Image (tube, rainbow, N blue to C red; front, top):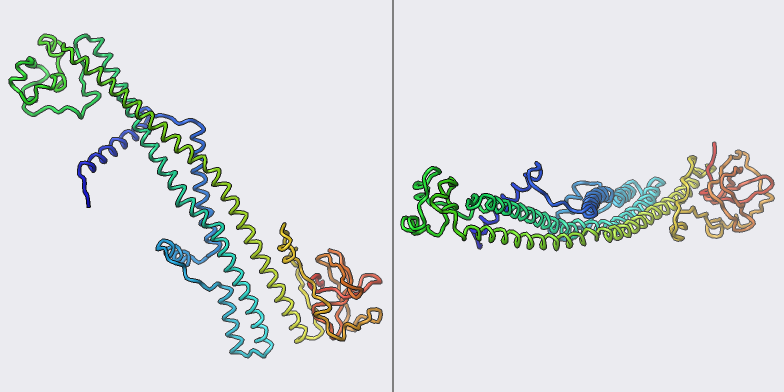
Length: 454
């Protein structure tokens, strides 16, 4: 390990200096270079985007995986760069339990047969849920994570560099201001030169022997005496070493050297050069940061596209669930009609309206599909003559039509949504169909399009 003590001390000094400067700015004791309003708006917009992206990401993860332990496990696998093991969904686990129960209780019994049918439906629901989670993770969660772990980290790094450049620029401004003030003070006082430590306090150190010899009231030695007495420090002008009494220094001539004024000019020139360099670096870093912040608009466009894909995958998932449950309802209705003859088949609660979607495929999947008369009707029903059909002795019921239905042939009755019709069942009919009457018209109607009224 290469341990550089000098670099460590230098970094610590820079950190301490910037911390002091930042604190002074907070308390209004130091000047601060302000960014323009457009730049501040970009910063606020970026921070808001980052905060809301984090919230949306966390809540979507909860939606897709409600189990917090499973989420922690997936997070660890992702950080270890290992493939997440396949996990059984709740629907698939329920289907497994129902299938095992049917096997043990008797698959040929009515209860066992129903358990098997429901287990198959739950298994299909679980598979649809697995596909939805996988699609949503790839198309929605992954882009959000990539933004937070990639683009946002780059923006944060450049913003920290910009903050450091701004602090350096403000420090250079303060140093130049002090140097010019000291130069103006020296010009006003004639030969008296102010304390140079105001601008560069850490550049000059007084030895212990010199400190013991000189004080505020004593007259400093002449240049010849200083060189003879302290040969190792004779190059340092005496006004670098201690605050002097102007009247005493004028008498001895220590501060009237031409080199002193030249040193002040050099100090001002150096401060101006450092300021120009700091301003250039600040402007360059501000431009880089501004370009990255303006890229947030492209991030919004990308997230918008991902959001559309998430909605499409969610719509497909719920459409599949509706279709699977509709098929299960038909199967259970058929079984119920076989086990309990003469029982009306249908739901007593208003069914949910069909899901709207711009996709033709999704719309077809969400609308109730009436059973086909050719495929589901028993052979004896094909010869059924509607003019000879009479209501059964057990009576009839009223039903409200949920959706429009177009008759496939003359044996069926066309339906309009929200109208009331009279329905009844005949012995031997397919349980998915009923006989409907409206005025002088009668015909077969699908049960899934009706709400039976008590």
